[in-house]
Length: 263
Ligand code: MN
Image (cartoon, rainbow, N blue to C red; front, side, top):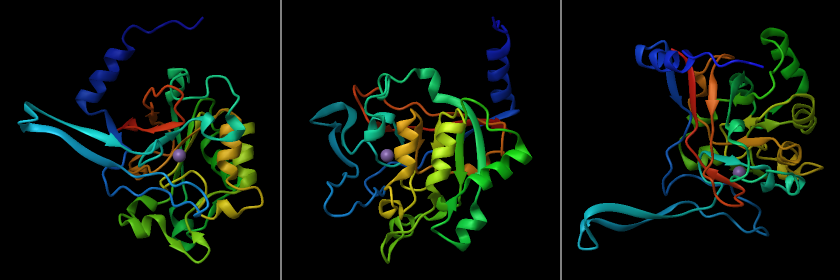
């Protein structure tokens, strides 16, 4: 049995307060302008956020301010649970309220694809590229988040971020066999991306559509999207905490994703 080291949590707080560790906010601001994925018109769209005031220190509530939220579960920086995809619909503990909370915390493996994506917005990560990363950094450990740093979060306008063009959206993602390999050959928590979804912009038109969703969720892995500040994380050595809202039967939710990293 592994025994608890009594001073480890005290050391964590000490390091956070003393500046040895920093908290990196990987979350994009959530507002009415936050872009939402565009699906082909035959599918039902997901609404972005609308925020309606209940009261603001006025007649409706003299001493208090609060709002009503209306939004799709998959809006802004958000979590994809296995139940989100048909391939994961029958897995145990596959929804936001039933995933064991231990699975919201894991070490981050950051793959830097920034220059590839600058050259080609449709860049797809390959198995070979991950294996090259592992030769430099060691094997992706069990329980890790695999995060794709692409620089995409620097695209701050909705148009640049969604990057719709000839034949649909153009944004980076995973080659189908890469998603399959990661989901089955490595025991990861899931993948995180800077783009609006965990599949590439063109992935709806792949031979087997949306392969990253299909393979990740079919194997009980998670997705996190619209991350920012991945350039503030080391390649390895940070810990990511990504805990969705405990929506009963939820397929995902917006969330605050934070990383603890060496300062
Ligand atoms: Mn989603």
